[in-house]
Length: 343
Image (cartoon, rainbow, N blue to C red; front, top):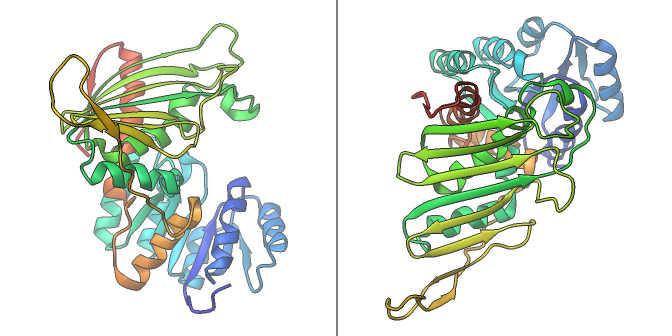
């Protein structure tokens, strides 16, 4: 454990996801001043489990923030509560790092962005799958221009996921709860700003979900690239990676990233003539975040507190990934192409 980080935090939400956050908080020497949840017994359980010395168990967020005045708040509540929790924390003078998705509606997300602007506080979202070494490798290889101009991104995601519980009852479980990771990765890999989408949601025969758990989405990006997403959470057999299986195509070549294996690809080589042009292996640019997953997101918050450097998933950026999710669901309901609102 590092002893050089003097920062303090209040954690709001003591559910299962908090188990992914307390270890990196402790590893970075962040003092957890209090844990807040409507279920006091859940707070007490987590405080005892992680040996959080001098940590208050509380149910009232506003009063707890006034008492402890932490450097930042970690919002681990359900999406429907994100707006209220984040805005309360920002108005109390705290920076905020929150779980995805940013909010339940675009109106709520815009309110959160405005509140961050009005209070001069930072709000960032933990889009945890960004902080994976191979994802940095894809981003940096594309960013180095080796594929030329990026024209096409395809992502396939097929898993037979028997969760039980709330996901089985959600109206759009795949897009709402999972696809935001893949939509955000498309932006991270270099797709640019989304401008329009045509989406079709459906619930396949034999599905154990109530809502539409499969989807095909075609996104048009501002830079001219097209991102196509095909996915299902009730596809038995031959699963893809949870990160998705990807093909990125540029005007000079192609990169393949699938089954969590190292990215690979081919580029044009030699004289550009003939039906099949000569090819060579793509030179990959290795990339590595300082830490994976939630730990990587936490490090960006701590770096901001020390240096003022804006995290990559700051709210003005991450709202674009949420807009992709909500526009895809809207398109599926209307059964037509829709513009993605300017955020």
